[in-house]
Image 1 (cartoon, rainbow, N blue to C red):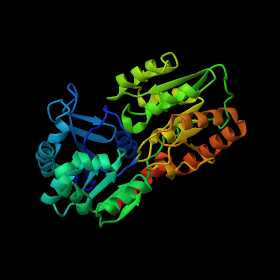
Image 2: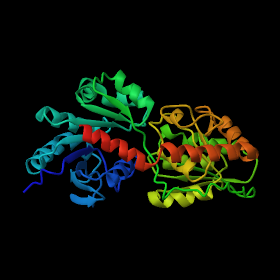
Image 3: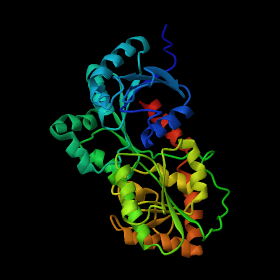
Image 4: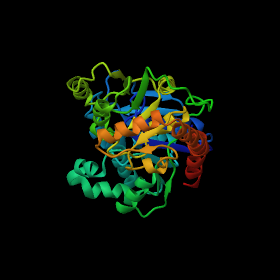
Length: 372
């Protein structure tokens, strides 16, 4: 017997944990903190060995597909069949698509079958918008329908808010950013002394072109003090980046740590001296916020959602896009100017604690769900 007293939400997501990205982390952090709702999710299996059904946090996760990357392309079709079956048993009050991708197409197809069920769309996209448009290709008309047919849109940055408008969204749009778990990523507010014999420059990102990791590696050529560039993450460009480090004579200076459990990242932030992500595009950038929460000064590019939290010379330093020499200059400035470093650390900590805790983000999302 279905308990109709507790509103049930059906989430559509292209991927989900243990496959990790900013969007997946956000969904778990938010749903773990929201009471009074029951959450189910339909997602693509993508990787062999993952369970067809399991509970992760507060979400009952249902995976469709065969355990290959192709599954995401099948999600709008296999997912709709699963959604209709679940809806008969669960009688969902609303649906929620994570990003205007394959989960967005599934949400659109479900909306067309069940017009009475409100549909929330979350925009977490970090890829360049021209690249997204290129991928969508001949499906451009249907892609725009995702924005036009949604009943409410949550964008994690002002940049994505503007994109939703440009794509023809007519529904209410609200900026609710991603956040940080301040119990995990924390600082005692004391500025750590620099170990100048072993300075650590950290980046945490998928190893793909848009995150500018190649530019950070190239910046190492212009640094004239003992340093290590620590790179956390995996991705399609990994071998190319390792070859780049070797070709630039930086093999011993660049450390590839691979994929790290998200909750274990805090110790890497805490042991570093500066965080750099020279993004070519960015939806928001959770790793910047995590770095700030652990007392790290940050360097980023003025693209996408980064200007939402990075105010130059107040909460971080801007570096130029595709400019390794400028990245190196900004790293030197932070490490050589103690007053500037302390200012960036203190202001960054204050900003994250005031605006970017997952608790406050979850409260805003709960209000949206109740409204719908």
